[in-house]
Every structure is written in C-alpha cells, then in structure tokens.
Length: 417
Ligand code: AMP
Ligand code: MG
Image (tube, rainbow, N blue to C red; front, top):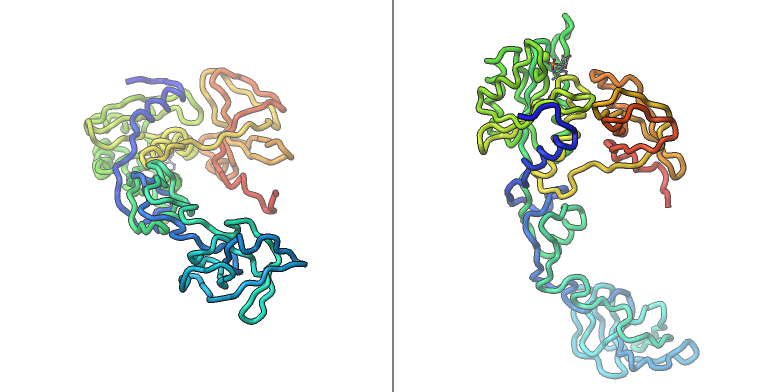
C-alpha cells in the first residue's frame, strides 16, 4: 500500500477505480441532471411538415413578382388553415389561403406573407411585398430528420434535452444509475444533532455535510449512524454499508490508539490502495475496496473541514464519474491574491478563500483561521486556493488558481449584458 502520496497521484488512483455505473430506465421528464446511457435516434421528422412561422397568407411566390405598396398584387382568399388543420386543396395561381402560425403550408403554396404586409378586403387580399420564395416557412425536418442521431451517450440531461425527448415521443430513457453512498461516523464523543451536548460531546456533523456533498454530486445516501471507538462497533457499522457502491467514513483514520478504521477495513477484507496524502487539510485519508467487486471505501479524516475538502478532491470526482459525467471537476479560475500567504514546503494546501469580482479580475482573500476544525470557514468560502506543495510564499497581487466550490459565485444580482 502506498503512503504519503501527492494529491495528483491520489487523484489518479481514485479515478482509475471509478467507472460509470450501469444504466437504469427512468421517466424522461424526471431525468434532469442525469447522464444519458444510450444514443437517442429520431424516428420522426420535426417539424413533421412545412409550416407557417407567421400569421398571414400562404402564396405562390411567382404570383407576387413586382408587388409593392404602390402596385400591390391582389389574390383570391380561397380558404383558411389554422394550426392543427390542413389545406382543403392545392392552391392554384392567383389564389391564397389565410394561414396562422404553426399551420401546415398547403400544397401549391411555397411562401408565407406576413399579415402586416397585406390589406384584406372581403374575399380578396392585396399583398404589398414581393416576398422571396420560402419566406416565413419552417421546413419539414428543419429541426430533426428521421434517422438523425439527436443525443449521444454521455450527454447531460438538461431542460433542452428533456424537451427534445418529449418531442421525439420518448417517455422513458436510459441513464446511468445514481451512485449509492453509505456514510459512517466514528467516535465516542459523537452525538446526533438532537442529542445532549453536555460533557463536551459534539454533533457528528460530517454525516450531514458529506451527505449533502454526495447529493450535490448526484448520489443517494444512507446514514449508517455513529460507531463507538471499538473495532467491534466500527465493524458492525461498516458491515451495514457494504452493499453500497461507496462507503464513506470519517474519523478514526489517523494513528491514535482509538483510530481503528484501517484495521477494521482490513478485517472486513479491504484492500487499501493508499493511506495518507500530502495535503492540508486532510493528510490522514484511506482509500481501498472491500473484496474484488465490493464497495469502494474512503476513510476520510474526522475534522469537519478535512472531511469536506478531501471529499471535494477525491470522492466527488469518483461519484461524478460513476454517475456517467464526463466533466467531473469543479471550475477553476485564476484570481489575484489580496494578501500574502506563507507555509512550509511539502504539502499542497487548499486555502479556503473568499472570492470577489473586481471588474474583469477576481480577488481572493483568506477566510481567516484555516484550522481544520473551523467549519465556519467553509460557510464563508467560495473557493479553495491551490497553494502548491513546494511553494512556501505567495505575495499580494500574485495570480493564483482557485477551485470554485460555490458556483453561485458566477451569478449576478443584475443582468450583466
Ligand atoms: P479523529 O480522526 O477521530 O481523531 O477525529 C478528529 C476530530 O474530528 C475530532 O475532534 C473529532 O471529534 C472530530 N470528528 C470526528 N468525527 C466527526 C463527525 N462525524 N462530525 C464532526 N466532527 C467529527
Ligand atoms: Mg476519534
């Protein structure tokens, strides 16, 4: 088993382990945010027929040659076609049909004249423009032709894809199954949020922040509850999570006398791929698998910030990939550092930063105390600044790379354009 590896190596190892989960069939209308696991071909032509893009008159363009305001062309209005209707018979030369938006263009007609360019008088209409052939017609197949490959496997299903599936008559769709994550907490000091905090006991908040991070990455979660600091109890809780795709535990993964996570995983048949990543927060971090085909396991550190930051770096991309997503990583921006930062060489630091737009630039400043227990710093941070392992100082004004955790950072109160 590897130990003390770099963030990059840890990322490579976890991503090698992650493969898209098999497909399941779900109602297309409920598939928002899922990833397509099939290609969608059309057995339809859309629009199904040439239809009018305007309210006006269907005409033969040749009849309008030379028409103008001063010399309008007069045509006989022989019938009317509304959306959902059809022309009674082919139009002859000198004839027109009143037509409405979305109505099929009758045989014989090849152009639609906007109603604003006409003057109606009883059974006749005067047309004041010589429209080019085909104007204001949406041609059959202008959107989709029968046999077209419309959506590819791997496409993320957004509102447009949902509308397209509906247009094609697809009520069900194959998407990658959501990853199922079981979340375990371990520690004699831990209580549930409604528990009694007297005697210095603390809430197992990681189970909640990690579950929310899982859901944000498209996974479903089960909270396995809190194990006490004995091997037996930890094994009991872990066993309950082994049917999940991923078991995520926090705490008890370090080297203290009460840290049993690694030993228990080995007893359960776990093969550890690595322990310890050269990063801060979050050095103690274990990754492996129970058996050849079993659940993947992340033993995350217990400190609330370490748990969340290690989740961001390693668990989130794995869940995204399992869900079929091709783009698994957060957006990264180049920001200007507002204040100097220093550290020792050796570990990559993820500095919680506040981000601010400043004209075309983005300014990054530390949220303050970077202690790995200061969960509040995560509520204040929009991003994680990457302070590279071997860099020891960054100066105010330096350009830095920041992973944007809070994608609402890109939203604005007022329209920008
Ligand atoms: P440990 O890795 O067990 O030494 O835990 C490190 C720190 O994280 C300790 O201060 C624990 O109390 C805290 N901690 C452990 N588990 C959780 C949890 N589920 N939620 C919040 N804090 C935790
Ligand atoms: Mg502990």
